[in-house]
Length: 254
Image 1: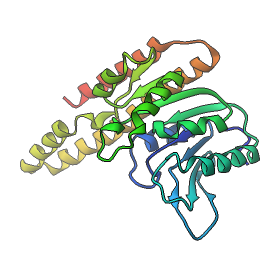
Image 2: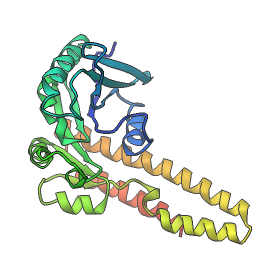
Image 3: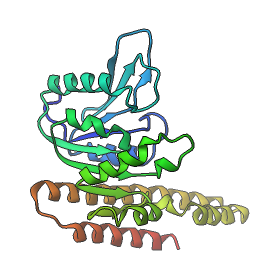
């Protein structure tokens, strides 16, 4: 039984879909604290609504709601069922206060069921620019920005879009693969020159640097979160540490 979850994450992405930003960060965060990853509900008309629980490891739990309501995502129609399920789940787990982490603003109404210390918005995409994006999404994002203590962004354009809308926005790009075209071209050149061993070395270096940079990003984020909880803000130190590491690792590939 999880007595206290350090992070409760609401995501529009499935955990087992593609291993990307949430998985890189949260698997690392789960080394030092409990993580509960709550997905969007899936349609299930064969049962009453329930939560499917999957332990990725001892400290990382994926929660997938099953709902008989045919409505996509964290929609308003789903909220009554989701609130009831999560309220019961959090009570059963005996959870005390934790960090609420959002990848989608549409899940914001579920915050009312969670005993939280801090709210984090990790913005990976401009979701309201997607095809068939719910009209409510833009409003929900502003509500989330009003509620959030920290905002992280996964790209420079996202940072520019949000930096004037929140006092604590931090840009943490998605690591070494931020420049895939340049690196792919370098590997392709090596391959064309029949230096396959060198190409393999470069790919290995890229993988190692990506892993190291994800570690640095995770540590910087956790430093900001822990500082916010304790009231000992140190935005510049965490951001500077991450920035210096990122620049150093980029230069290795030049």
